[in-house]
Length: 186
Image (cartoon, rainbow, N blue to C red; front, side, top):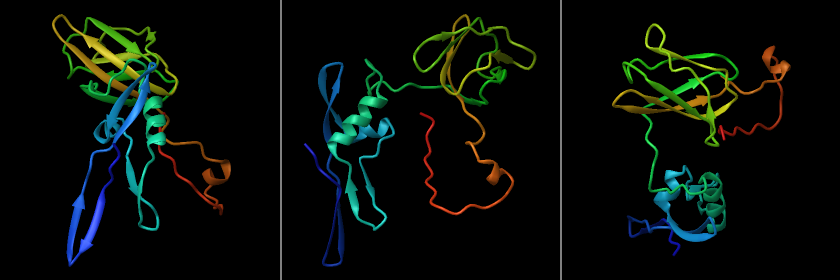
């Protein structure tokens, strides 16, 4: 079933209609139906307004392709991951994370990269309730902190302060041309 947001202006009244968008997505060889709210959980908008002001509904094919890319095999949208804290650090540098407020004593630390691979790191808390992380390449990481009776999960985003800039722009000179800004870490 595909339904879109409809705007009807009649006799001075504005009528909004929002129907649920359902799209079939293939997951591990099986088909499942996703609705617009599940797409939004993945950060995918199902519609937008174009530059000319017209309403555009994203095609089912595009939605399905994006959902397949953003959903790891075996991951279900109904199970959203909760993070107790989010940290950002610079790539390829030793990082000291202030975790004392999350857990007063840490018995074990597990650091996983985007692919679920474990990365060795120290579980020794330093002065000020901080732990030291090894230099990491850019990407997303899951940091699990375990104490005797508690576990905290943190999202670690390793990204530079800014994107690459040509030397001309770093010197403050100006360039002319078309500029497209794309915001994404993935």
